[in-house]
Length: 509
Image (cartoon, rainbow, N blue to C red; front, top):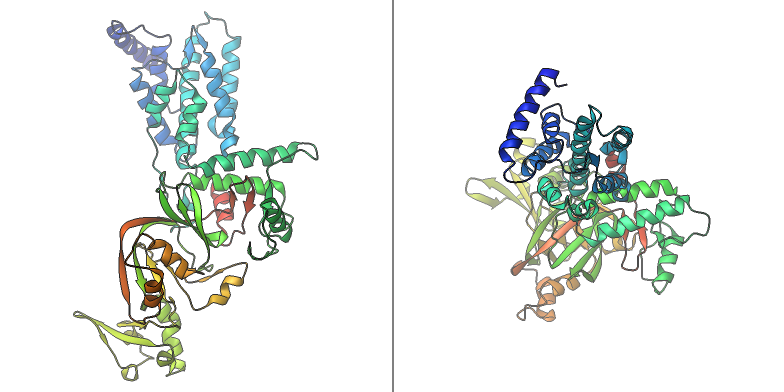
């Protein structure tokens, strides 16, 4: 707390500054008291961003040259009341109003209303309310913009990609406008975010309303009933449209569904603002890759993703290359854990799987006769690399699509086509296998007249590796959404295959 002597000194200094600046504009009420609050202990709401929020508060008042924002005629202004209502409406973003000191602000506003205009501590109360309200708005704005939690709390391979905007500057510009509009302006701009907000409101209405109250169409894509309802609502045939149902999500309480939507709203705050005009998006729990042009899905292909323990990482990058008839450079982890032990048991394993052995050296990698290798010597195995030749049984199939990234993950074909018929498709070591590789290749190269369909199919089956550099890179976004809204306002839920919902909920709490 600030001592009485220190407070008097601050007030005197602030008053002198205000007098010196009075020739520029009128001196607002309580400016000296605001300076005293700012020079005291932080009044920012507690939370993961409290220190950054307090810095924003100081930047906000510095921009205003110390003027309060929410006071008018020794009262909290109507815009202050409207701003407090924005705090109270934090649940619309899946957040909790109490985390932004809503109860304390409400009590402070009520106390000011009851205090006489000439009460000795009225200016002090007004200044405290002004700063606390600013801090609450900036705290809420930061959480809405970039998330209250971070993806690294869920898994180290998930990195936040959205940067905080100029919260202090934009809030100052919005003081004479609408605090709600300001908050909406710093929220993720993707329409999917607003769709999930509406779905959240509908779920809450369903939770509290009388039976029979209409709500958005709700599809549990883990149940037969949910898939049937989806098909009927969209006028689709009952076969060959959606993946087969599972029993993983039957009879889930609506409270849990509400939490699931809240968690997915948070994930949108970690996403980059701009996906690109045309892009690919892979939703891991949905097991699909979509090609999107101008906001519309133009291709939809089923995929296989990483199994638990070999989770597909969540990130964004750009596709640069299509590789036909690719070699498969076997990762060291697979070589050590699977290939070498298999060879030790079966000397014909490498030959039957068309795998070459290479020795790493200063001059590069050179072929090695498998018969000359001591397979039970770990030190010798460390210097070996394994590569599967192009062909029908190659683990990458006939084509792969590269978007260079630190995880060495890419999209590729697979000889294990039977896996695509399964409802849950988490079977890979992290890469993403596509069901229709020729369709994807033709789509990626659709504007390349030198690569007609016949040439693409021939290159896929040539048995000789051929790389095609793309003229324009294509953004690729690997995401993890277990709740989403389709283009007809249908709300969908997917199984939490990696347990990330539970981890994120624990971090949130």
